[in-house]
Image (tube, rainbow, N blue to C red; front, side, top):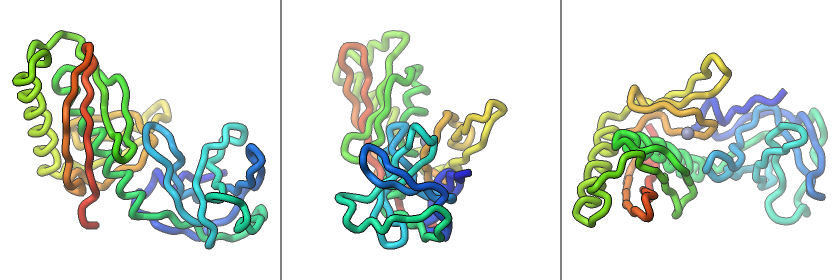
Length: 230
Ligand SMILES: [Zn+2]
């Protein structure tokens, strides 16, 4: 039984655990650990990277076992051939984790600001350098058809985002009656999510937004960083 420890504590950097399965996937060796600190790519968020003892690894979801497994980065020359049951230390690159968590959490906030405009979520991407939330507007908004109006809407989005960051809304996760993990930004917004998040919106720094509208498709691109650890 694997524990998805990355869901419990975004800020946990290392854990002493043990190997619970080993195998091969597309010709590459992998190992799975009991307390999995590694967030695999998914839900628009990139994968962590980290180490199993001293071996640099990336996590992937293994469809056949249902486990999050780790594979060596690059070639397999450094792979020691982990054994089932072997004690290991799992460690993530915390700086990368926090950068991803900040960007991903800011994505929820941008989604909240867009929904407050009456828009509906169409797509999201939380990768560094290309982070964006895409919306559709069920009711045509005449402001979106000309530059001054778009600037006005963008100002509203920026204000909503800045207010929630200034309020330092808590970011919490809870499992609902259907077993779905739901992530909330205070009382502002909730969404099902299996990603990693910052403690509170006050952890976010340098949240920047831009807006593009094309054929009724609204794209809010954004960037964000993690502030000093609290
Ligand atoms: Zn999330």
